[in-house]
Figure (cartoon, rainbow, N blue to C red):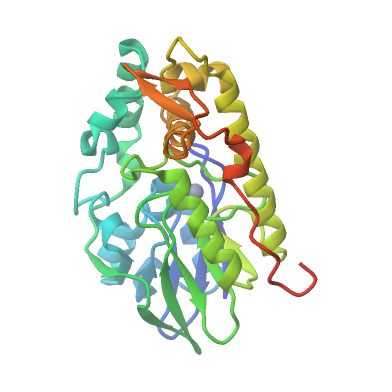
Length: 328
Ligand SMILES: [Zn+2]
Ligand SMILES: [Zn+2]
């Protein structure tokens, strides 16, 4: 298995694609559908003696453009079977709506993004829409699906949170995990703005982390950056990040004057531009929703106030499970 890097200046820095050489020649994620992305993936494949027309199957971890963008191009060249979770099919090009805001604008309406910023965000999203790539025909997979790779089998696990239909692929013989954007080595994946379809994206993501920590020993091959060997350690630091952020979000709320997710995002992140209007406000909204579910904050009019009905310490909502690993 080879790790291939594809540039990605538009979103979050170089993406990884993973190549299993024959047979069946398989790619896990594809990189972004920019000219540079296309050229870099072509060059990386040809260094191993392959071209787009040789790829027999593609496994997509999630729908994001920097992971799925080139799937349609490759499928057009080779007829590759493309596998993704059925929830991602709703937002992949040629299958469903390619704009998440079109998909569920109501939820974004409730975030209180001022009209001017909302218009700029929609213009930004329209501008990057071509990066979704060519239309792709998708074969849906779900938890328990088994797919063949050269010399091994991978099992599919639904791992929602970063997106609604994110999946990870675990090799049966080697226990390597292809984790997409569930766990990244150097920063925490966006929760709440990266997919606006989930009701409690942070709660969903924390459940995914718990499942991941309990069942996947790794190593994890992430969607960006280098291999993660200390999976439990990385998960602990991601939890610590969300614990701090829940505290911070609860702290900026007043007990009388409601704040919208947009106002909370500004207080937490400073200014927001481009995709960060969506990601930052969505992240604030995800933390507010999670706090609301646990009685720390309540909705008033179009915003949230601090209530502390049950005297919950916000950070306590993210607990590390009892240690279940050797030495962990
Ligand atoms: Zn992503
Ligand atoms: Zn990503």
